[in-house]
Length: 271
Image 1: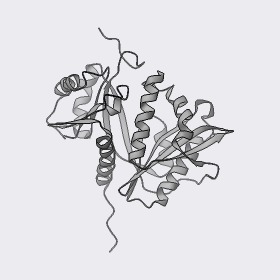
Image 2 (image 1 turned 60 degrees about the horizontal axis):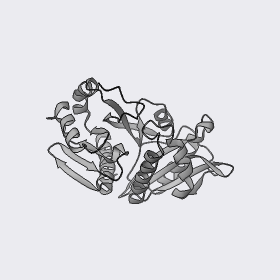
Image 3 (image 1 turned 135 degrees about the vertical axis):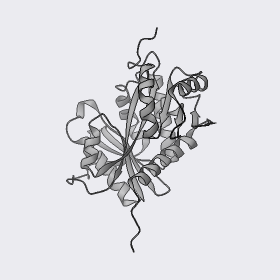
Image 4 (image 1 turned 90 degrees about the vertical axis):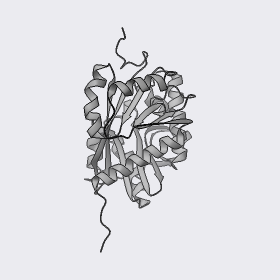
């Protein structure tokens, strides 16, 4: 009898465990909380996802307690970040966080379940080193709201590199002449693969390069014959539709709640 395919909930749980394991290994310091964990890297204060509270509980905690704990644990940082894993809980917290002036990050996990709607020729995509995509990554981050300063970009790239080293990350890039104009990354550990950090330079968008580099990373991931292959997307942005056409299906969602520092363009004026 063939092995039974894991349920959507089981695949989502394994994808979450993959990311949580990466945060655990990357953290310089962690604190166990009654409802989850806090991850801290004081040397990288601009990296929101390196300095956060991760809530694994399904219930029994309110926004007021989480905000108070974030203020205490993240007191040395300009931002506050709380990530809530279970939809049954984050739905009850969402209005209270928004009312308190926090913004939400709607994160969708998608697992690869079927063939792409069409094949693309990926021969032009090169497997490259992290150093070769560094300049393109820095250019891409300039347009991101949390990385408008050179120091913030340096810290985020340092954190990305560290996570990549922990997860056997490989990079795939498309070129315009001698310059990288699009890239995607592939992570792999313990039978799980993740396509991550898909980026296209602003001047090259609309030419199909996002599909091209994602397809190359996906092909490399499938060649590893992983037990699970997934990608993470902004639930409220268009790339999730591209990933759907490449054979990824929604498996689950989490919420990140962020109170950005004043220099972040998303920050609301404070009284």
